[in-house]
Image (cartoon, rainbow, N blue to C red; front, side, top):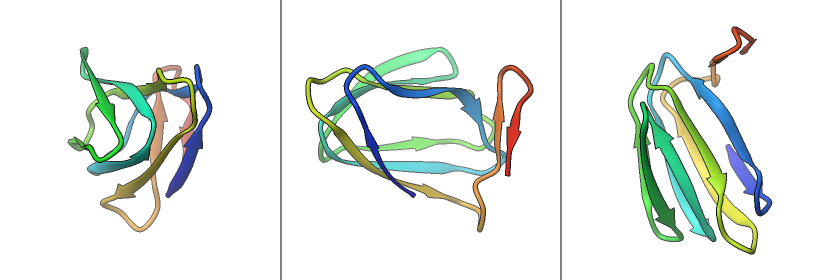
Length: 86
């Protein structure tokens, strides 16, 4: 999954029943995984374990370009409000 995230935007808190790996190509962002926050930038890889609640925000001034690999043929997403996307 290829994504371009605008400054100040991101993904709201959610989880997947499978692992997810982010590879950042440009920009920088703040990731939250199970309540732990950390910064990542172009060249970094972020690994999200299965069922871990996580979110991300572009904290830079330019676009955050990333590729997300899901350990499943389709990304199954459950949001905190109970919404689900298959």
